[in-house]
Structure formats: structure tokens, C-alpha cells
Amino acid sequence: MNNESLQQGTLYIVGTPIGNLEDITFRAIRILKSVNLIAAEDTRHTAKLLHHFEITTPQVSYHHHNRTARHTQLLNYLEEGQTIALVTDAGMPGISDPGYDLIYTCIIANIPVIPIPGATAAITALSVSGLPTDRFIFEGFFAIKRKR
Image (cartoon, rainbow, N blue to C red; front, side, top):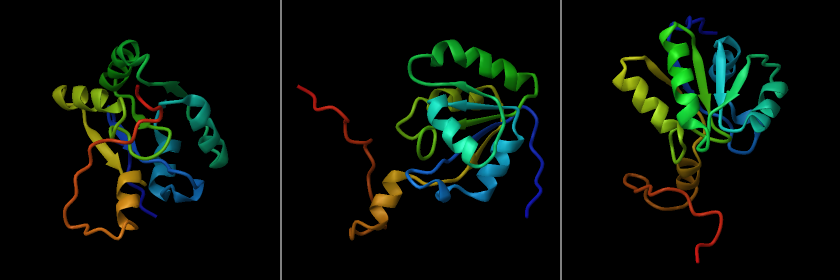
């Protein structure tokens, strides 16, 4: 097992399962157990994942509706040397997800951002589509509700 230590003041972008909890990586579990804080799109949803893997790291919500208020708080934690894992409900944060704002701000502020790869719905779907995979364009996910 790799015992890489966490870097102080770092934002970890952690991929989460897109359906089956067993699709999470060992590295993702280790990071989630080791960081000071988990910023989750939906803390209730993420709590199920954390409970399943006996992860007791505190979490706060970070989603479309509170990102402006939470943004400053998370940046302050990072600047103080805290480590934060950013997770979404399913897949990779920052892909069709409000996490891109926090990632961008960290890059501008020279705060380290480290990806912890995981499942991604677009790539998973592409891999079983039967379409050529040497080139493709991703333009976001389908709308959940039909627009009028």
C-alpha cells in the first residue's frame, strides 16, 4: 500500500462511485479518512458512503446554492494548512458540478489541487457505447427535467 502523506493546505478532488459503492478506489478511501474536512455536494448522500467505509472525517456541504458563502470558508481552511477533500454525489467533482469554482480559485491562489481519480459517467458510457473512442465531445449531462 502506498503511504504517501497528505500535503498541508491542499484540496483533493476525490472521485466517488456512480452507482456501486465498490467502485471507489483504495486511494480515495485513504484520502477521505486522512483529510481534515470533506466538502460534499449533499452531506446526506455522502454520509452513506462514509458510513459504509467507516470514515469519520467531518463534512460540510458545498453545492450550487451555498457555494458563494462556503467558498471563503474553505479557502481560509486551506490557507491555514488544512486538507480538504471535495466530493460530489457521484463521479468526479468539477465535471458538470459546482466544484469547478473552488478548483479554479485554488489554482489562481496557488493552493495545490490534487485529483484522486474515480468513476466518471461520461467515460463509462462511452466505453460501452460501441462508438469510436479515439475522439469524442462531452457537452454536459442531459437535463433531469424536460424544458418547456
